[in-house]
Each structure stands twice: as structure tokens, then as C-alpha cells.
Image (cartoon, rainbow, N blue to C red):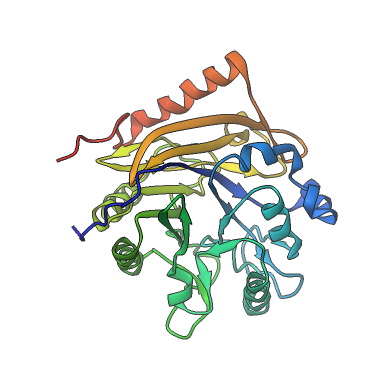
Length: 322
């Protein structure tokens, strides 16, 4: 196990996470006024000290679509909309970040340069794609890394490499594990946001469980993911908090209750320790936006979310300190 920094500051702060976001169909017109595009859910996204989501789209109006069933793109206003809603970091380490080929990738990288929020998981080379966004919260340095374990056989995937632009690919996890070890040496808290798992499978795959263990051993304090289009279980792997899947979040054209169920996961941190996890449940409506539940309905949905842990390797509480 890599040496681990201990946060020198024990101040309490919060990290919030939500799942997949795209701007197709009924959501596209909301970008005509990006500052108000996500206003109905701003209070949920902006409440934490740091909020991280997965942005599953290329940022471009050019390029040719990749040869795959679904391709997503949006204008640079998508970044403005997320920032205005309280999102601090967007991961684009996913299987749709380069849906419109080299021209779309070039536009995406240019838009990131001017974006009003941090973007991880994609870059002009592997060093940038795997590089963390580091922010100091109440005296504690937090590093956020984005990556994808999804290997889409119908497209080129565009893994970033030496002198090659693309996404941070963890199909071979060696580079990601090394990035976590490096962040462990220089930051107090290390967060990894992954695109992983199997679509419409509500239990983690063996590849997910193996990668979660490797990242925990390398020093990750929080490992969060999405991709399955439905919720997966969350809990502790030793002293590392793992959320295997946060499902869709801002997502049009919902057809089932399972793929429409979503929410915001808020972790309370003290130093490196996750001291509490709160699930704020919601249902995605026909306008593509989540509507947050309250009262008895929210409590019922929280119990359902906790029940998803039963098919994982996670515990309901952290392991005791050694």
C-alpha cells in the first residue's frame, strides 16, 4: 500500500456527487439560457463544499459522429449551465466524451480552457487526462481524478496517451492506480470519479470490485461511479467510501422507474475520513430534470438505496482504525 498523507486539518466539510448528465432532446433548449438551465435543482447541487458530476457528451458543434448507437454533443454553454447550478467539477472520462471524433475532441479541449468549472478525465495527453483537479477546502487539499473503465467496442474510444489527446482510460488500470498514488503523496483527500460497470446491471461487476480494491490500496479515500443508467450500492470498502453507481441524473427520455430513480450523494468529511453519507433521492421527470422527494417517500427511497448494498462487497460502516 502506498504511503498515505494524513490531513493536517480536521475541519468538517462536504463533498456531493451526482450521476450522468447530457443535454439532448427536451434539455437542449434549456441551454439557451444557461444560467437558469438547472435552477430547479441548484439548491441540491450547490449545498456542498464541492460538487462533482459526470458530463456524458462531447462539447462541440462540429465533427462526424462515431459509428455507435448513441452519440451526444452540446455547445460550450453546457459548462456554464453546470457552473451556474453549483457544480464545481465535471468528469468527462467516459465513453461519450469523444463522440464526434478528432474535430469534436479539439473543440471540447478548447472549451475546457475557458470553462467556468474544473473538468477532469480528458486532456491533450495522458498526463492532463489523468491529472487531478486539486482544491483546498477549509484547509484540506482535495484531489479529484476522473477516468473510464468502459471499453466501447463500436467506437475508437480515444484513450489519451503520450502526445495523444483523449480520455483517461482505465481499461488497463495501471495508469489510474499510479495517478492515485501520486495524488496520495501530495493531497490530503483523494477522490476518483469513474465511468464503469455494465449497463442495466444493478450489481457491480468483478472488474468494478477489483478496481475499487486497487484504488483503495493505492490511497483513494472516495471512489464514485456511474454508467449503468441505474443506481448501484454504496458503502465502505475498509476505510474507503465507494459508490458503485449513481445512475442518470439530468437525462431525457426516461422510460422506466429504475432508470429514472436518481439523487445526490453527500459525504461529510473530517480530514480523510467519511463520517457520514446522506442520500437525497429524486425521480427524473419528463423534462429531463430530477425532482427531489421529501417526507415518507424520501425515507422509503433511502431504504431502497441502502438495500442495493446487499450485492456488493461493501459495508454499512468503515473499518476500525488499525
